[in-house]
Image 1 (cartoon, rainbow over the protein chains, first blue to last red):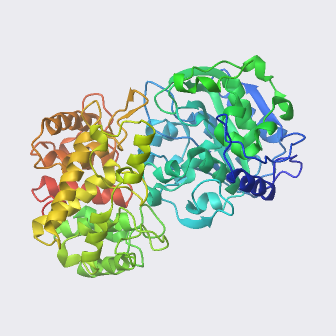
Image 2 (cartoon, each protein chain N blue to C red; image 1 turned 180 degrees about the vertical axis):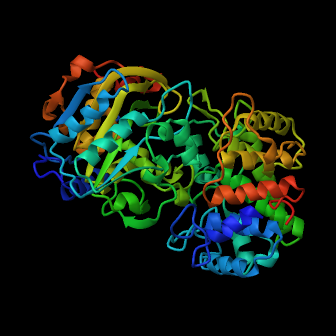
Image 3 (tube, rainbow over the protein chains, first blue to last red; image 1 turned 90 degrees about the vertical axis):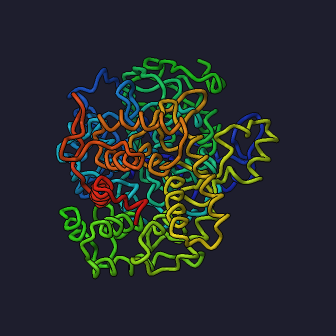
Length: 332
Length: 299
């Protein structure tokens, strides 16, 4: 998909690192392993662009991002995976449909053979009603024909090779297993359990409720950060576009407060995108469990993540944290 | 009648039903069969084909998989027990035994010992009752608990259970679980009523389902739940939500609105027309309940 992609750990490298990490969970409140992945030279670059609102300018912005990362999607099947959780008119829980539609148009313009929108919400069973309430029907023409409810999709059993979590396998939707590029499109939010919910945590939505229920509670019992890391390993062909125009702070991912950050963050490495988003929210990525497990603390340094567009410190805004998560605050 | 024709037109070649399109799943197949049985118009051949497909999803442990290709029995087993006896062709005793045996993982002594060792409070009301999980090994939630209670109540009403005291105990536990998992606004959501000190709101579909399972329960909490359900019904834009609320309220003698009268209140968006098999079947079941025969309770 991206021949120039530099130094994102390959699945084999990740599996090796994951196996080592699974051997032990370290002290000092981290999920570091005794032997972390080898130190990287650099991650794939991350784009940080200002976007003041959900305006028509997003259409040009996403096209620019696709070109900047040299994504060749000609003739490919692309699946856009927004974050649809619940709807509350008083706050901003879900990925804004305008950004998703901008991505749909941009990937079509880039020559993708098929672009679908797909999601499997974790609490509400009637996904189309949730999407309607969230403005998807009003914003995306022919939304229903473009949408796949991942909770109810055809599934295939996938075995984890060396899982970090307690799971040995998962049934997963064929729509995401069969695509050439999965585009994870989360909202920039704090999360009351995981610290932050971004492009990697967004993959919980691919686990089918039709098999595991609403919520997908097997993931909680198997270890949230560990399952995030395992799902990340299963989908190496993932591009991340984060809706940070208006995010959520405090008691995210559902009951928090809207917080304007005015950014769109994107890249071919979900790890580096999520680490960058953490810094933008004022969280230390090295203290986020799933990032520790996936990359190793020593590989999460800001200097290892090349950036296009804005500098982190020019767009960073400290998101409010629950008292329980105060220890995640980044020292600037 | 129209719903029945729609359902028959959506039956897969293998005899089962999908949610929208594609392969057959146990859940929509059970609701479609229940709706066809409630329609009272026969369709014996189609029902036989549906039952034949359903039999293939029963696993060696007695439970049912959510679809043929999944090698795990889940909460959908309770749905098969809701089907009328004359439409069944599977091992009901083993399905019943599997359902009775299921509890949320938080009910286990290992988990409670762990909470005790961590100094956490496990004595709260919400932790005092054994509900049912969606998937074995996970915690109990409102949806599968309500459906399992309905299934076991139906078995008890028919005088079928192999072990009546065990069945009654589980029904009582399930009812207790539902009463304990009510949201601050009086209704029910998926089962998480409060997190990190913040209250969660209820949903129309789970409020309707919980009220249905709590039919005949005389408790102030149910009265408050009914009031919340009526509020939700007045503004619910979801076909599935409306159907569950109609059945839940109707089970307590509180449903007064017919679908033809229009359900949305002032300024509210009218509920969407039923789209997939679930919504069509549930609309048919709600109509049947409104006409005096609630298939979850009476068939």
